[in-house]
Picture (cartoon, rainbow, N blue to C red):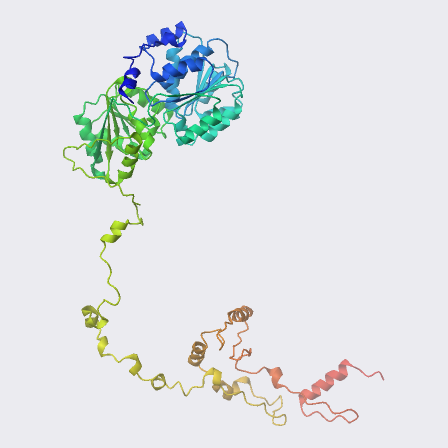
Amino acid sequence: MSTDTQSRLDGSQNSTAFSDLGLGPELIRAVEDAGYTKPTPIQEQAIPGVLMGRDVLGCAQTGTGKTASFTLPMIEILASGRAKARMPRSLILCPTRELAAQVAENFDKYGKHHRLTKALIIGGESMGDQIAILDRGPDVLIATPGRLLDMFERGRILLTDVKILVIDEADRMLDMGFIPDVQRIVALLPKMRQTLFFSATLGPEIKSLADEFLMNPKEISVSVPHSTATTVVLGLAVVDEIDKRETLRHLLRIENVKNAFVFCNRKRDVDVLFRSLKKHGFDVVQMHGDMAQPARIEALGKLKSGEARLLVCSDVAARGIDIKAVSHVFNFDVPIHAEDYVHRIGRTGRAGEVGHAYTIATPDDGRFVAAIEKLIGKEIPRIEVEGVPPLALDMEPRRRGRGGRKTGEERAERAPRPARSERPARSERAPQAERAPQAERAPQAERAPQAERAPQAERAPQVERAPQPERPPQAEHPPRAERSERSDRPERVAERPSRDDTRRDDSRRGGRGRRDDGRSQGRRRGRIDELGIGEMLHDDGVIGFGDHMPDFMLREVPPLPPRGTAAEEPESDFEAEIETEAETAEPSEE
């Protein structure tokens, strides 16, 4: 922002008065009671456009009076008329509860001479009290998107009579993921309405939303996008991670801190830092999104009343918190999003007063600091803290944490590994040579052949086994009654190969279940195992039945005599039994 624009902000060179903007006498008196005499640039350009009924797209940095630029003309427009039960006449959407409460306070301050009713619908408070206010019919409804949709789904509110819609801090809505809810709410409103769209930043996404919600808007931009106020003194201290708390305590002691915001990136860090500062004797309160709404209101009340000097908070307090004469802002953590830096330091240096904003960074925050400096268009001055060694920012992006990748420089710093050809021979390595005298061992080629180590050549491999002996003739076959048991056959048991031979044969074939040609028989082997038969695979692919021949294969029936000849007496009991069974089964017809 230029010096001329800043001077217009505090009204020193602005000749326009609030009475020249078209406001009524009641509003002029309320503004004068609040202590304002000259409008800010955003108020000077937005108020006449709103009174004319035009859609407005306003972009101005935080602390320039955006809230009054739409509350004042809305009160003037809504002064004539009356709302119906559960049907508000205007709607203001805010991203956070604190910002919604801030807007409600502005309506109370500027509308004290009007008989307008308002309803504040936010989470964390009694729903019964809010429903009672809605039943009376508020003229102005100030709400957060989540609680408003909850009330609508319960049937407690109707949005068909809304004449004016205000979307405040639209860029914050986008960051917090409220845009789908906002789009759903806008779809419930009447098409013929007036829409006011305000944002501290005006990026491509915000312009896209403005084109969706607005119709032929009046664009107002009173400052350079993403700029910081010239009344804020900036500073950056780069220290080690373990020195951040000591740096913050040193800055709090040497600076003339009247009241200050201390911002952290994470909620748990807010609680840890709050307890640390309280332990060292500082008057401090905390506020973050997980706290109940009464506790958050109580913390803000203590800061406003002067009971507490420091407020440790998350980005929930970066917007909409209007506390007069905030002297300092401390960024205990560098914001991840560069836009949040602009909103954080916007809590100080308001209304033309001088403020101080100091940021504590570690070397790993280099890329975040670079993004902030690129956004605001200038370099943040470096400061040194007594007793804490200063460090330099690391601008190289790195992936931290366990298993993170190393950068090219870190890989280059490692000593190169010698090539395999340049490595010393194994015999020259002292530790291994002392450990085992490998040089004295005979090489593998000079060792005795495998046949000399074990008499394996005498053992017949399974593939070269002799064929099974021929079956004895029928005449030499003993009768059934005189047969010996299966255990009396030592000759076949002796021919059974040993387990070692089988393993060698399997290894020669390429493993168990492999053929000589290398093809696998695993599928067939698995099928045999499933049946549980216990067969043995031979080299030729034939399935055998173990080491013994089944009995039905040993029983041979002699050929029947030719027809016309007398039947001879059976030579054995087995043949006699067959003839007896045949005579019993087929009796003669005679």
